[in-house]
Image (cartoon, rainbow, N blue to C red; front, side, top):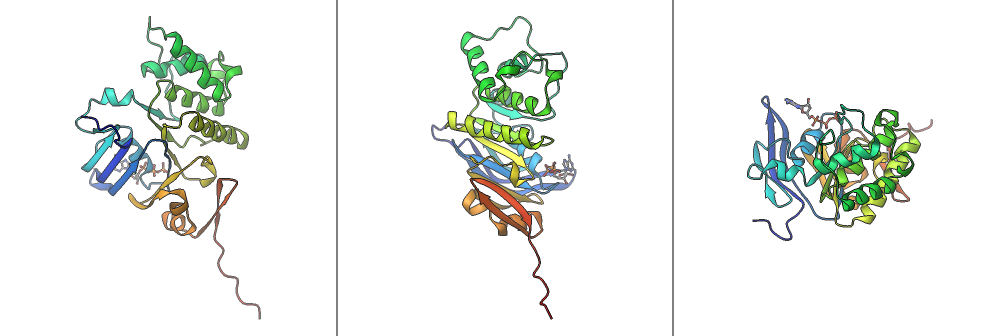
Length: 271
Ligand SMILES: Nc1ncnc2c1ncn2[C@@H]1O[C@H](COP(=O)(O)OP(=O)(O)OP(=O)(O)O)[C@@H](O)[C@H]1O
């Protein structure tokens, strides 16, 4: 049975063991509607592993993961995956499709267009609206191969949202983007979150500069364990980020955005 007010995600005491290695260690986390989580950590901390669990791609070794009120291990994974939006920058593409067609494949949860399948008028209208919201209206008929990396990244977000998921998972969406493309992407995410107040998101990154201003919560992983998890005012602090990256780092927040700088050691006293 699905509880009406069940959180979008709930991990309780999760361990994940692979090849004898403990990749996630006693992780507990709850994500609710309208929350926008950053999942931060150094290389190898376990961020992608955790996103794989949230996206129902792997199962926990111990503990439980509930996604949209359903327990992993008991739920039909096809049911679940059609209700999750997952933006993977390594999205594979075979046939030469146009941007709009790639967005439509989010409705069938396929890589290619399904032969003889047609979107409804409502689905087409929603796909167009998302393409516009992501600032890609002028590129809607462009062939995928001709799009820039930034345009592809935003198109994949439209693809992930077109089936109206309750949860959007984003794996390092700003990687490889230049400054302008990154800023466009972050503005688009802020707008989408504003337009759909019930949507919950989890965004993986190494860089605080890549967090949209609309980020509400953060989970900080270090060697598979949570260093901190909660509202940004409590979790994105100099102390927690320094512990998470095992390096002294100073955090500032200006106009809603975060920056991180290596902390300076005290200067030697002048003689
Ligand atoms: N199948 C596996 N068997 C054993 N170890 C694995 C397996 N998959 C991943 N790992 C290890 O688990 C750790 C966490 O990997 P993961 O990819 O989740 O880290 P990450 O935080 O996403 O890192 P990055 O920022 O570099 O992408 C790494 O040390 C990785 O080598």
